[in-house]
Amino acid sequence: MRILSGIQPSGALHLGNFFGMMKPAIELQDRGEAYYFIANYHSMTSLYDPAQRRANTMDVALDFLACGLDPVKSVFFKQSDVPEVTELAWLLTTLTPMGLLERCHSFKDKVAKGLSPNHGLFAYPVLMAADILIYDSNTVPVGRDQKQHVEVTRDIAIKFNETYGDTFILPEPQIKENAAAVPGTDGQKMSKSYGNTIEIFGDEKIIRKKFMSLVMDSRTPAEPKLDAHENLAVKLLKLVAPADIAAQFEDRLRVGGLGYGDLKKALFEHHWNYFSAARARRAELAGHLDHVESILWEGASKARSLAQGVLKRARRASGID
Ligand code: ADP
Ligand code: TRP
Image (cartoon, rainbow, N blue to C red; front, side, top):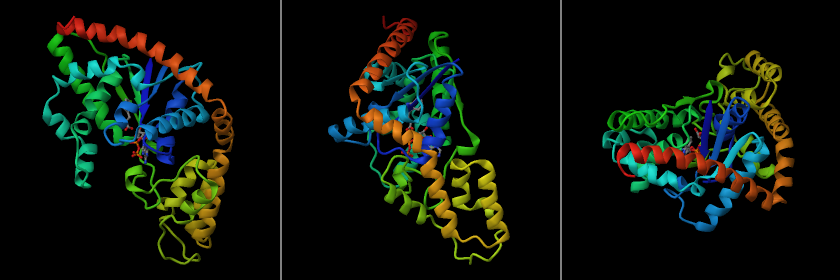
């Protein structure tokens, strides 16, 4: 089985990214051949500062390695070190119906929020399809918001296979239901574009403050809360605390007597402990950036030779060779 996923270098890693994509990807690295990349071409649809892009790219590399990506088990690389993917994106884009892209929620959401879209943002699912198909990927671990893009990838692959003969493997999205849409500080899906994120490797004080500002209702601590399972802090606690501890807090909230402030404090402590080993590894890696660069280079050379073979197959099938 080949597993593939990507993450954009578009800002600091947050709990949604970690539990929705990174943790499942890391768990899968023992289950097959894993290919994970930093989607720097994708970041070009929304970030226009070259120095920032370089810095974010290194940050994502540090984040992923610190969280447990093992370069001995997984191929880890920068998307742009395999430029073949942009050629494949062109072969695919000529078979992609406009309607398929017009239906994409992530595009529609961004337009609805008033963002003036460029063509890259509109066409981005085609580049994502190329990312997936060029490695003959079977499984794509992502958060729920990316599921539709994997379905678009399948549609494009089917169209290519029908038009030019069997060329691509059809991938499946893999979504962890307990972390498919991690809520942010306001209870909506956590996302950089909503300004409701809680970072993994940020400053302690700022992170504590974010937990303390989680939006709660105005019921008194004494009131029993039958909807304790829907409480935002309880939902987040289930991700970072052992199951029995999270269940105890949920029960205390349900019967009444636990104040939201105490719950949030406990949540912060568990969050901080949960990532303490990763934090130490990240600090260590940050002192050895050459080592990180060489991991990415080595990954790129493995990824590139695989990609070149698949691109050749697609060129031959479509009469471009
Ligand atoms: P953002 O919405 O903050 O810009 P990205 O689009 O860069 O996040 O997402 C990177 C990865 O993290 C994707 O696989 C995405 O599905 C996952 N992800 C992002 N936010 C969440 C969330 N709140 N819950 C679960 N997964 C998420
Ligand atoms: N679009 C994904 C995101 O914004 C990142 C990504 C790019 C990706 N190419 C991919 C994820 C291929 C999985 C597979 O989060």
